[in-house]
Image (cartoon, rainbow over the protein chains, first blue to last red):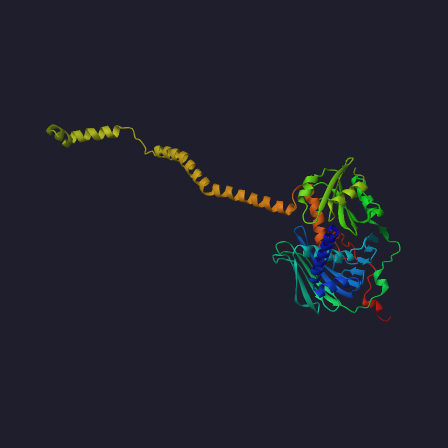
Length: 316
Length: 135
């Protein structure tokens, strides 16, 4: 009898899941599935808010499935920089420093985050609406609006229905303010691409990994960088020192299949209670002390997982 | 009036005697010193009254304006400082939350912390279509 009720429960959960997936419009499902096979070259604008400021960048993008190349126009403050990325690695070339930064890839994470957002949103009663999106970059689109149960738009996507290319995307805060946008201003969906487009080969360039950067910055700050072993399932994505209205701290951003988190190291104490109280949405936190250093983890992982990561870094 | 008194007043001798007596008096020039003193006293009192009126009319709104301004500055800077709260803990949360949101639109592009890495010199070896012209 008990086995039967478990079976019925699993069946009901499966049906509910199937119903939720059926609510995702075909064009959006196509876009999610096409991310790994898209081919295009184009120009896009990216706009987002950081603190009180709104930033706007123009990028030239080449895309061949998981491979991407990004360059910047001649009048851009980032002119000459080239970013290439495949499923395993991201390389960012800085011409003025003759430096190549090796980083984990980011492209796949966008599709993974959208899938995760949709799954969580559907469980919370969000609705997806489809309408004619008009033309974007010369192509007819279908507009997808993801609304919360009260009808507030959380995000909008404009998708070219034949290929599933997302030509425009807008993200909103809780009161309808736009916090992020990207939009193609022109795009070629039949591009001429060469394998070399996705390589950076520059003899004599200084190659810097995030681990190397972390050691350099930590040494300058008088800290011991808290580096996780590769076996942890997380890769160090960036290391930077920051100072915003307070003491300087080292921020180490880690990414893995489970999600991402940032490890902060500083010489001033961090209150775990305050940290937990201020965390919003899906963010979890954990803080501890190691000798004279104070460490804190903030990320989109369960708190228990952050505890395990802290133990890997020496927290007893 | 008595008769003898009228006669006295009408007699030329009496008039002459009076004239002489008056002329004999020491000449006293006209003085407005008393008025000056009065003005001084009034001036001493009057400013006190005017100052209190000024304070009442202009000082009170000015104080109110200062208080409102201070409040506005406090609120503005507090919001600008960190919507995630005060202290280092708010800064740490803000750092993660903002980057997380931005990732969805930047994709493989630049993240906020990479925006400070601007190209500082002119890029060498930037070929143009002119370099492909026939020699």
